[in-house]
Amino acid sequence: MKAYQADIAKFTDTETQVFGISVDSVPALKRWSEDLAPETKGLSFPLLSDFKRTVVKDYGIFNEAAGFGMRATFVVDKEGIIRHIEEGNTAINPNAAFEACNMLKKK
Image (cartoon, rainbow, N blue to C red):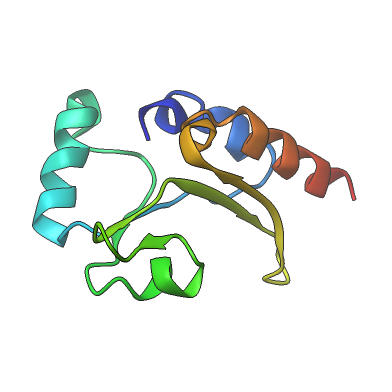
């Protein structure tokens, strides 16, 4: 999330809405966001709680045995179609998501 916050201007230029989803509770996410970006009192993009694990299950990124959502980045176009998925540790880096968003803007 920190890398996405640092590069948020790049996404704005591609007419992209960035948001994060976590299986943590709303209070935990609020505190985490404030700790991550104290100068702005939190992230400049929405951080949503999937405390009931609905979204991570629907998107196939829930580790049932360990009880957590795996790292993933999804780029969804304006029609709601998933155009790019980045999973695992590479999902932390916003470059691939930015490139996918940039390509969608050019279409």
